[in-house]
Length: 100
Image (cartoon, rainbow, N blue to C red; front, top):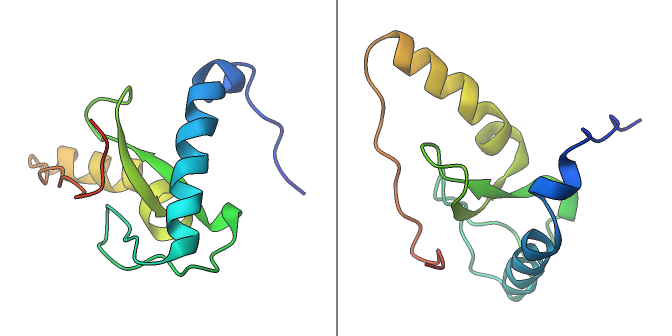
């Protein structure tokens, strides 16, 4: 059973987000797209629910590119928080396919 969407979901992930995600979906289905966070290739047959359109860790208004849902996107905030508590942050890599 899926969780209910937060009230501001459509404002954050509206038409522009869906268009960009659709463009990436098409590119993923063609093959050769890598997860911007871990660098591993996303399989061409990956289910839509297994990848997210990842945000920049420092500026959530910017997208970095597709990333694995589990292990990459949905764990990133916790990992960044732990690094910050220890006094250091890793630099955010730039995905070669990121649109300006």
